[in-house]
Length: 405
Image (cartoon, rainbow, N blue to C red; front, side, top):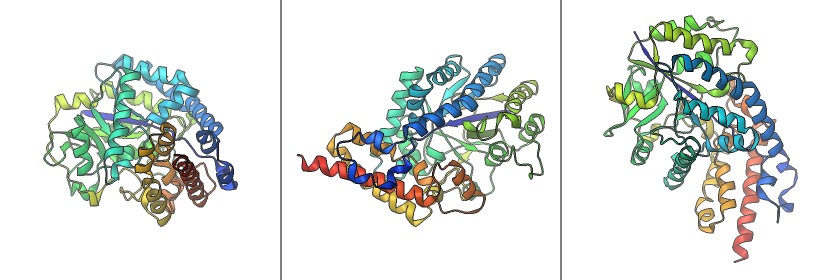
């Protein structure tokens, strides 16, 4: 019977691009502030404030109030993207203070991810990926006065090469997805390690995670409604040493509204865990209590993620349009770095955020509906044209700088 749970909440919001970019603004871009031209400040501030009111504020207050009672045995892990933290500092600093309280009270441990929630980990050159990870480490130290030792990549993208890079940066723990084609009959509910590395891999149990993240409000689900005692019973009866539950923090109040009962579910789950002697551990606690039982080998050609049913890169690189605009953006990396223009590099990095490519997906069915749910644009073609236009404007500004030298 499982007696240990690891809970990871991913907290992220991108800088969304202006829809009006496809209405002929390219020719008028010269001399304008590119950040204001490209990114929709009104939309981004509206979304941050809305999600803060629905999710970040009530969920974090609930966690602080409830976890304080059981802090000796129940804690959570939080991964907050750099671009999310930037927007909190600008629009809702009170949310950042609540997250700081969670950490200060030792109720949560911060897990590092790439600052821009980007796809740079799959570049041939690891330089930009390392730079974005280091930016995030420095921001976490500055804001939370904590030296993180655990890592989760953007959307849990993972392979052995990424593990080697992350290990070289001093991290001891990596969160990623438990994928059947990699596990080959083994359970995700154990601690694993990358081949030939002294590191800990914590594998998300996606079925149990998605029971809350996606199915909690699905009235057609044969287990609806889901109550905390039933859910905990499923976890406890799972084979293995521990169960990793990971989901978007926005599950709480944004994806599932307060009227759905999601907050009551979370509070009762914590209480039932305590009553049943179940501990919820941080990543650093795992390293003191467990040893890897086996290796989890993921060659780069079999790169995994937590996205969609395929659990691969097709959520962002599954169609010709996605690959085309991804390669176009990537091709600008060296020249943007050589220009040593901080504003241009910042804009290029914001355009590296995975969400921009996610919106362009051509998938249908349930996965396609999820892609559409997150997109601020009317269609995937609009998303493709808007991102391409943003890159064109960036290229024109680069050309202008080069010609002025």
